[in-house]
Picture (cartoon, rainbow, N blue to C red):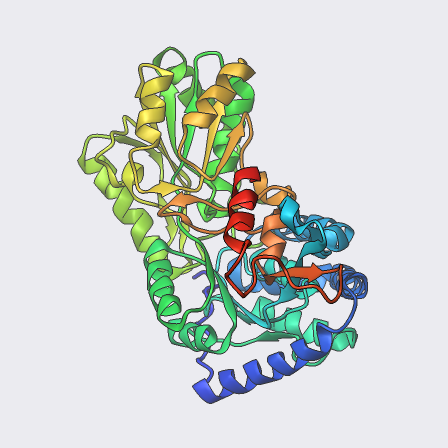
Length: 480
């Protein structure tokens, strides 16, 4: 009998414990924000260097609770964090420095600029699919911006962040409490929301809506990165070998548990059969197991996700689709073969709901316009891709797709390009992480207007409203 590899969920911290941790984080933030941006960036870079030095330990901890392949952890979690650290440490002074602003001609004796001030404590409520990448990748710009972070990882994958917090503390580089972790389920997440000055949530659309409502009642700023249903639009002139390999990696990387992963493929009819056959051949090469070595796929991480995947496959079969793969290998360990669904139609759950598992449904379409219409028909708008050798046409189609991120002959790469905003539209979220915008969101934008000369003179539109004042105001208005 195979040993069970799914760990139990972490225990809930008490509300008092969360409050105390948040208070320590707030105190650390007060000390930290006084340092120059360049010094904060240098210290965060040193912390990352120490974590990278211990990357093999970190990978083992992450594997112990996810069973994802070690190579995949390095490629999809460690490497992107390194790129995020590089971008924000190199650009922090430019992004967070005072930004000059224009003034109207009647204020030529005044100076205007925008100052970016840290918010304080940033709460990061993060999911189970990327237990290092998402929380630490978000913590980097938040801390460089002058904040403390309070991380609430998924209760199903908490050990990775607990190890990280211990390792960060062990460096002695950051103020005590600046990078803190609290554990537990959604009730602990609500305590994090109450105790933080801002929250960045990554997870399901349903939970995101609940957090948005609670944040609104508290007047807390919140950024949401929620569900997705990535449509892969494959046109007749697509480079078939690359498109097929991309479909397999885009749908099955991290065992399909990727918010921007390919969840459905719309393929023009002339290339449909060849595309399906190429995907099948690629799938047959995939190795799967729990060891983390010598495999491309591990298992599902979140126990309820297993039932969701099985339900979606059964629904597809019941509605006439053919399923290649999808066999249960080990139910106790949430191990299921990747599945290719052909003959998919819009009413099937695999085409309309987020599956978040190793399932790739393929639907034949008559033209690119039909593919775009179907792509835009659902509630999600996180990521999409267009596959064709006609790049001009691809970019025109990309502009028609309702998604926060679009790849042209590209898939799953936006996260590793931190100069680009990362986020969705419609029910896929609010706000953006990464890019200049994604660092500044961790700050208050403070508008500063300075009267420079003449020092003792009143502005002409001040009291009293008499004499020539009305004519002066009218003259100012005419000149604009």
